[in-house]
Length: 415
Image (tube, rainbow, N blue to C red; front, side):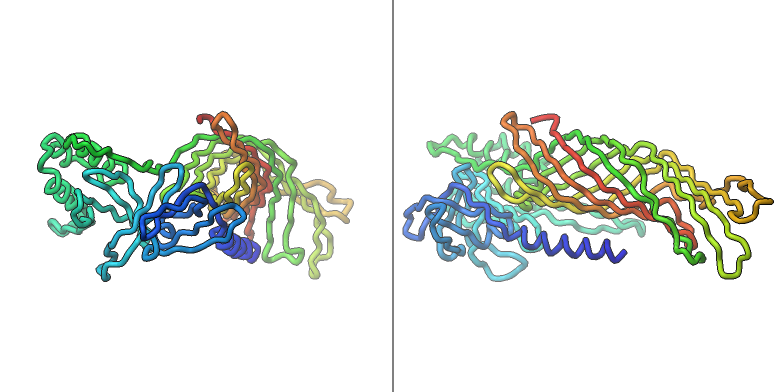
């Protein structure tokens, strides 16, 4: 357990350092005078981007930090744009933030990520003040039963601002509260009013989904303790085995461009753990020879949070998470004989080490690796991983644990 806590603490510290890594990309800043300076802008997560931007004129140039009060806005050559606006968060006084411009035009949609990680969306029509598009979750009690439901305040705000386009009004009743859905409606409105102004849209950053194939190899170690035995227990190493699996990889683009969540399913084929040892307690006359054997296979289901360090070609990453493992096959048994009594040379019958083993393990895992972006648009990554689970025993007198050491390759099946 101490090793697991040490690993978790190390990962938190490492992640904190990783969070501060710079990722400068081609972009610009707009000064209060309206002048635009082009260079490189640090590409960060939504919360930080709303409160601070870092700019340098060249790769070798000095870096300058700017707050919303110091700029009209900034953006990236890829099309993402932020502009300074007065906004209110948590009933506080209005203050300047860098709001992300999702859609710009006769009607504009802007976004701001609060420190509570909530996304605040705003509508501006023409030169009018910002109107926040709000959806709240409220509680209703009917016949002593508690119900939660979402309000539709944002729909009423949109309807009041888009009265001059009846075609759009008909679609508001079923509109979902999401950046993508709201951006679609605002673009439809801008097309409907038919002004000479061109609607400019920043790309709506999605959480891209990748389906990946995983292949690799692993070795494992089974630890069995006997709390009432003087020798403390046994640590048994299994033979190296191949492993194969699939993963769903979701980039958390709007939270942080370097974060992703992975859900995996890995098949671990049948592994046999065997050991023999002699044991003689201080009160025993004879030495007992133990023979122990455990066979198991499993489907391991890790859920991982991955941080990828910014880099143009090869991208290092670290990740950590939890696992739930389904034991497909499990046979645990042991037998004994006297090692120093020739008159009793035979083994006893096989008996379970644990009478009622668990069928579902839980564990912690972490790893590090490299991601290689392919010209085809597919991703290839290589990693080393460590995992520790609570094993097959829920018997307090015979606790178990499993350790897995893996080398894995992941390849995206679609661009």
